[in-house]
Length: 254
Image (cartoon, rainbow, N blue to C red; front, side):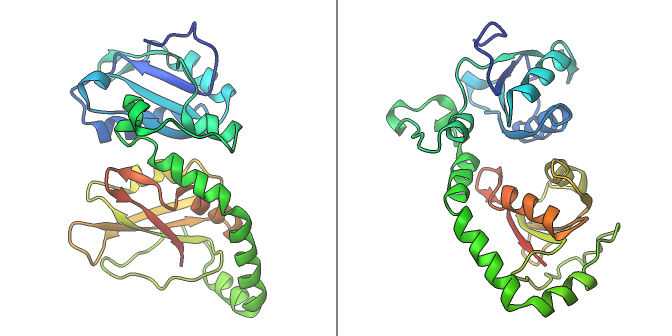
């Protein structure tokens, strides 16, 4: 078991959680609570017997992790006081951030967290990092080729607080940055407030509007930011984010 006596790092180990709470709800509420103290890049909570009542929260920096640990230790969460400490070892997300050449253990030696698919989002971040230069060149080319159209579209797409989205109607995708993002492949239980928790981590968030998609039992959403630049930061981070097992969110410009 981890405790605050472990070496300080970006990952917190939380235990004494209420194991009657559904894993997805627990993960979302932990994210909502701890995002107050710093940027959370991953929340790992498994329903396996070994991990019941426990979770790991990966922060982007040590300062955020330390602030959250000091503020939330002993806080009553779903009728039980939180027990929080630094994890024994750095998470794979932190290790890869510190060392781009970091290679996680193979499946035979992987930890319980790896076996339960907790690193799907981390692998996505590595691919994003490898492709960053290529994406930047593509954006610059699109901006150069469609300069006049971009100006017109940005004027028409000025942020609005309501973010109207007609149920069942998918807006046309554009291939250059705008202030509006469109999310697809959302589980049926996702609501405006749930999705907002993710996007509010990024500066300039204006509104989130979740609606039913043309596909049965699947939702979609429109998220509006104050500018195309601010929306781009959120898109780069959350396109491909695994909301729950087998539900990978797609984020595009509209």
